[in-house]
Length: 187
Image (cartoon, rainbow, N blue to C red; front, top):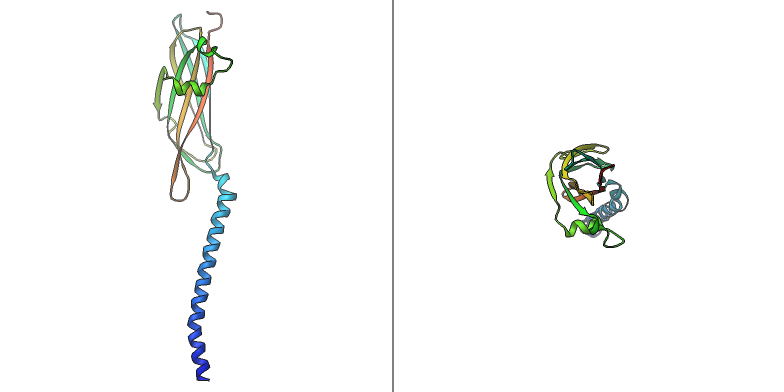
């Protein structure tokens, strides 16, 4: 009986070690499964969903100047919050001849290759955007009348969102608008 008791006590220590190791392995498997399930199922709907768009109207001021009325919108259409740091607004006055060189004009390619005629950095959109929050800003730009030109205007929003529990991600959200620079009844 003493030998059996000694064997059981010796094995009890070993059984406790096996039990503890099994629990640790089970916890690691459960944690891995939870993280994998979150990234596969839940994380995509939690992605930052910034929606920006703009409106552009060109009106005559006098015989030499036009006024660009630019309305810019930013809305959080997702289910997680994000912050807008700033927005860079740039415009290009593009001669019609440049646009008509081929059957296709790419605004994206044009802005990569050509410096803007005007650019500014604005912090008017610098807010914390909870889901469904929207901000609208209006801008006025004064440009020379050039009837044989188009105006391309672009806004780049610099946005900070949360990537994971411990890190943030930074990304751009762009919106473009284009109008042929002509004033009704004028040439």
